[in-house]
Amino acid sequence: MSMSDNDIVKKTPISTVHFGIGKEIQLYPDELVIIGKEEGKEGRVPLDAIKRLILTPGDPHPSKLILMADLYDDEVEDATLILAEGMTNARDFRAMIPRILELRPDIQLDPARYGGAVAPGAE
Image 1 (cartoon, one colour):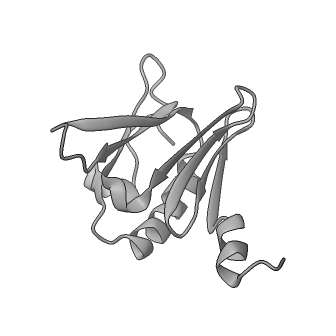
Image 2: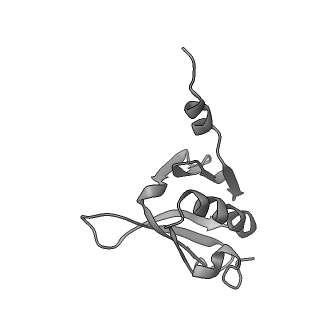
């Protein structure tokens, strides 16, 4: 049995952001995958399901960011999913944003400027 080119692309992330101990966000052509190796957790969100990505300072530690996604959902008006908590690698995440927007230019960013700048304390 051979693997198609599509299968090979699917196995290799376009971009990866490492943060915390054994945590990462992986960008694939059609989805974001959030992995917590220490907790043994993995979450997958199709890019076409994401309406808006929200990056906000954590509480009580503003430098530990929270990444959330507003999802398109006909049944729930405000379907927001927490993708990652305690994200400390804002620089690499900012570098991932243009790649996400290349794949899905309709995804909104909140705050709109976080493709280039992140909230105070999040550096």
